Amino acid sequence: MNPPVVKQRNNGVVPASTVGRGKVVTLDSLPVTNHWTNGAISLYHGDSLDFYGEWDSPATIVSDGAYGILGFEGDTSDHLGMPEWYQPHIEAWSSKATGQTTLWFWNSEIGWAAVHPVLERCGWRYVNANIWNKGLAHIAGNVNTAKIRRFPVVTEICVQYVFEPRIDGLTLQHWLYREWKRTGLPMKRANDACSVKDVAVRKYLDQGHLWYFPPPEMFAKMATYANEFGRAEGRPYFSLNGIAPGTAEDWAKMRSTFNCPMGTTNVWDRKPLKGSERVKVPEISGKAAHLNQKPLDLMKMIVSSSSNPSDVVWEPFGGLFSASVACRDIGRRAFAAEIDSTYFQLGLKRFYDPDLLI
Ligand SMILES: C[S@@+](CC[C@H](N)C(=O)[O-])C[C@H]1O[C@@H](n2cnc3c(N)ncnc32)[C@H](O)[C@@H]1O
Image (tube, rainbow, N blue to C red; front, side, top):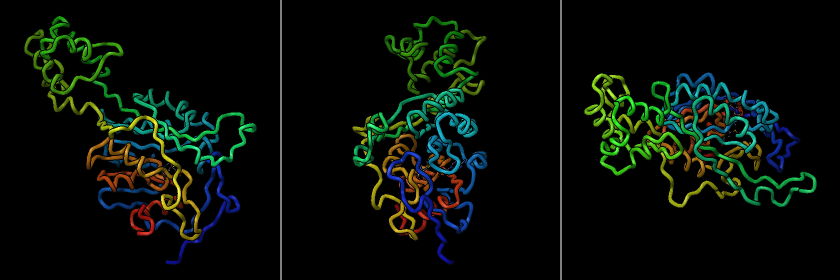
């Protein structure tokens, strides 16, 4: 096969800043396949909207799409167009998500602010905003602050959401309370059910901000007690299938995985990608293939903290498929798509070209 012809844009100059960045190279070649899989990782060439329907339900979604900075062909020119851009994707994620799904939403601060209402409307509950601080290395002293009249931006954010499960249309917090009320038992008897002094009423059945998710064994205790002592005509209580009371195992599935690596906070000090970390275009030595490539270590951290081995991860805006590379390295299954033929070809190579095994 002849080497692909490479066209350069921007007169061959890579923009120094990430603002207004564009595509630097375009390969003339076509992908050897539009769908590659090794059984665990499945990479698709095309619009992710066309593929969600066939992907297995995800434990984790890593979204790194439009930033409102014309960062790739199809990105919007500012944050105002972003809610509309993301809406069909978010609706599709919601239709395949479960109570065990975590979403990591990479963006700029204003981009996230614009899209947050759409996420909330579609059932995603905000958990935490994490800051990737690239440090001074990101601007390398090249910013004229008198001209831009603001502090130089050296961050991106990665916001954690979980999919809020609902039972009978109610959030878990409201459903637990409703179920206990249905039993006709006084609230304080929930403490007896759980063999605790007052934590059941103060925490598991609280209707305000003090609520927290009962551990599965406590849920099972409440369910057993309610079905034994609650009004006979309302049974079953705390049932997730309408037939039998829910078990500890059923309840454990209503919550997403989260394991925090020791010493990690929501500020991730991590220099910008450099040198061999960056995927290069072999035909143009030294040229970074994709200016939005994310660090593999950060991808591994978010994927491993929100999923278990063999769980499914979605990467709908693949670029060079950094989240899928992370999945390969830490034993997760991945479904990913990239719409751009050049990026798809270069990203795919990370899975089989020994020179690009990064
Ligand atoms: C910010 S970049 C992702 C970079 C990636 N995280 C990495 O580390 O390489 C976003 C990518 O999404 C792609 N994209 C945009 N809309 C898409 C869609 N509807 N389906 C699939 N890919 C899309 C763009 O071509 C672009 O390469």
